[in-house]
Amino acid sequence: MGGLLAAIGLLTTLPVPGRRAVDLTPGAVRWFAPVGLFLGCLLALVSACAHWAWPAPVAAAVVIAAWAVATGALHLDGLADTADAAFASVSRERRLEILRDVHHGTFGIAALVLLLLLKWAALAALPGRAAAAAIIVSCVTGRAALLPILRHFPSARPGGMAATMRAGATSLATAAGIAVALGVGLITGGLAGMGIAAFVTVASLLEAWWLARRFGGISGDACGAIVETGEMLTLLAMSALANHGWMHAFPFGPAA
Image (tube, rainbow, N blue to C red):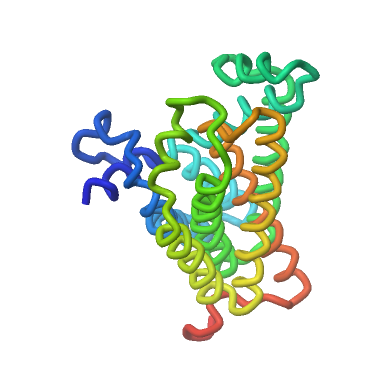
């Protein structure tokens, strides 16, 4: 139970007992995918209510705002820090210093604007049922993809968040997390949804490989950036397949 509370405390702004004490716990890693599923279902409910009240573009903006609030913009901050450091033409040591800087530069701001714009556009292009499916699978896959990354890539900084979490990314936890992501992809989008979950997992590993080359390993900020880009890729892929009629939301449930 402690690992679950730690994962909720780390990945969301939901109130949990002893939040400050459980933020960095290796056991939290095994709960990343389930917490992602819970978060996705919560945001899917927000999306359903927003689609009832407003047209799709406004509903998408409401969901993006709720997404940032529900996660405390944790991953968005990691994305900005990572972009500033990764794209800087400086030494590896200087990049690590930039990662620790709380101020955001041009690369970080540009990354935030582009990512939020793409996530909003992808959601705005989807009808309510498909938007809910895309939100759920993106929340799960973005977080489940961290498990193999934490397991196979070294930490950029000893004692950092990634180093602490790495101990919890066991073979069993990694396999279970990926299985949850693939299963959720299948339930929400059929074989196309499962394929998207697999594609995003591989893309996240490639992103982690590139970031590890830039930083000498994976940092907590890099993990946040990977979650955000994984969510964005999932939404874009779901939107693209739905646009061509190649993906149907919740194919095993009652017809819309």
